[in-house]
Image (tube, rainbow, N blue to C red):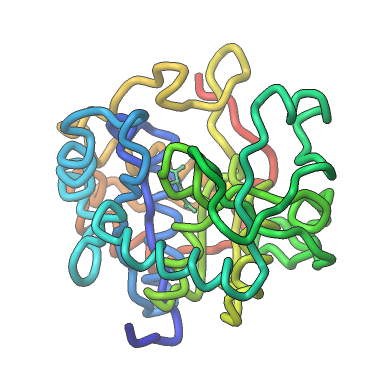
Length: 292
Ligand code: GLU
């Protein structure tokens, strides 16, 4: 795929309908891309069928339409990208960067969840089901986040081998996201802070594949009354599409952005045009926000 100066994306997993937290991520990545006159793509990350909810992809697409968050080009479905993931896993195995592992959950628990030194790290598939892990090696864990500034994280990508294909044969999120961000020529990833810990793994994998990583911008999370992130797991209410412009106004405020004058409040297209013209990444709060 060709690359443009700015190419962003929204990449929801169809584990449930969108809620206000995921709308904030969609809106921020959309505004950041459009304010830079860039492209904004939609990728449905449907690589983990046991976690998915029937009909969720369709509901997500309908919600984005209802909120006038129009993407460029065709939607990419990760469920149709298995051949690309298989090819990258084979390449990493052949290059000695990855290995088969059939350590049990118990083995890992014995080492406090870390991948154990005693694993034979086999280049060929052992009998029975095995996972494929990426071989850890020294890498940087510092990056300049476009919202948070310089971020220094503990070094999971550098001192623990991580799974790229699961024992059940499903591809890991870390692998699929990097293969697709590289293939789609994504230059900017704007997403929730819950994924901050994954960023070093992804930068590491990009480097392994010889592709420059995108720039990252991590957004504050919306928290419920118990202080937990709004998420499908803790039953955040689904977006009410009939109140699309009110939802967008709520998210603009949460993202620290100015809100348009009243006469633009009822029309999502007009509201978004105004929001693009006034988007200011430096106003996005650094701390998570309670939802009243
Ligand atoms: N699919 C991931 C999720 O819904 C987001 C991936 C990303 O933005 O990097 O949490």
